[in-house]
Image (cartoon, rainbow, N blue to C red):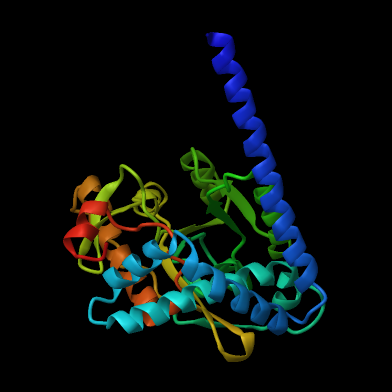
Length: 314
């Protein structure tokens, strides 16, 4: 009996590997098609493709539910339109991977990105101390690295490896042009502290669900949220700086860097300070998403299912 189960598991692993290979082949074919195009034309192809495929995918219900939670005053038709925009933006992001060198100017041309710094703190402008940059998956979120580095901050970005190792390797190879370090999400605490203590900043996308995490308000509803930025700030004294990436007309981009979150009083106990800072971070992230919800990649359920069912979005 054990041998039979072992054989079955081997077969499942084989089929999974075949599925991974097929996914990677499809993405490679897509990149092969869009690479000869200009970045705007490649993005247009991606928008057209995923704008038609995405709304038919099983994940589309999560997109609509998340948008409904974040935009309770929008009509059903407006939510549907935003949902299509989400997929179109994601298609453009996928098509832009082979063009990151041209978009950022790393290939020798002019960058298609403008960086707006609303953080006027003198120490920040002098890059005197590393920071903890927090963002949502907005616009082409990979370009936030360009904005951070343009202000003089070397940065290591925390990311979740893709379940398909072939895809993960392909994506990381394309991101090399951004000259960033990467820290895998699992067991990231020690590498993040090490980076900050060595003078490198850390970047995190904090708009995703954290299974088993603590609940903090997001758009007025409790959502499991990472406390890692607040914890890091407590440990190292580094400021938490929100950053937003937005897609503009003509397939240009704007990276906006905002003032750091206000530090909590030293009289507040550390655990409570972490909670207060995380709640403030969620308010900042919600504002960034609300500014342009059609560019928010929200293909996974963000809030606890029971909370979303109570809101009637499922």
